[in-house]
Amino acid sequence: MRESEERLDLVLKGADLGTWDWDIVTDRAIFNERWAEMLGYSLAELEPTASTWQRLMHPDDGTRVMAALTADMEKLYPEFYKRL
Image (cartoon, rainbow, N blue to C red; front, side, top):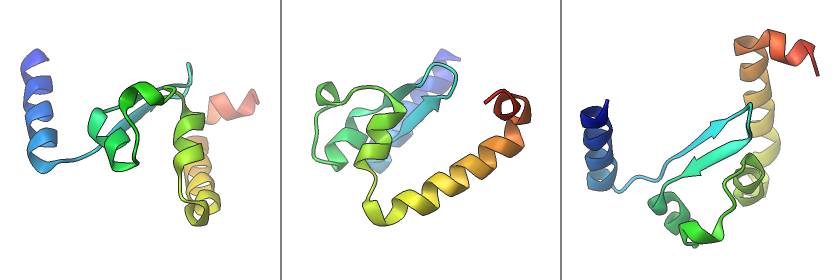
């Protein structure tokens, strides 16, 4: 696992890619430094939550992206959405 993570890190750095990941249960988000830099921030300036990601999304994309995310999540986790 460690070796795979190291390779992924090298690929991301080599390609100069920003990434984020979101745990829907805890609402914890993981952003890499490059992602923050691409948006004009340092990693320390960003609260690691999905609301940060949503706040930084371009306004023209918000409705479409959130509708697609909700539709995908409902398909992947129907039991979770039944409880809401």
